[in-house]
Length: 61
Image 1 (cartoon, one colour):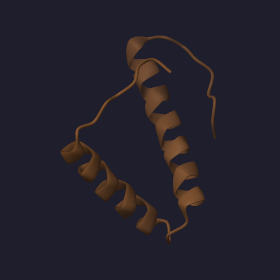
Image 2 (cartoon, one colour; image 1 turned 30 degrees about the vertical axis):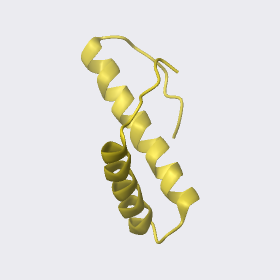
Image 3 (cartoon, helix red, strand yellow; image 1 turned 60 degrees about the vertical axis):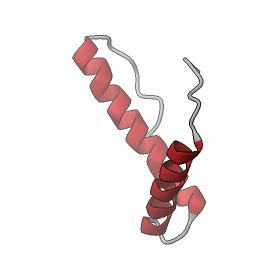
Image 4 (tube, one colour; image 1 turned 90 degrees about the vertical axis):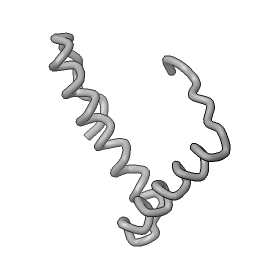
């Protein structure tokens, strides 16, 4: 892990609201939502790596 992000209570509440909405979009299945988030993050990381010009193998999905 590169760094630890610390959130204040307002940021934590906003993050919780987004997380709840994301889980609701996945039928309330927390594990399914987590798996989807991992896949999405993998895709986003691939795109960032392309922009940086640093080739990297896909880790997930």
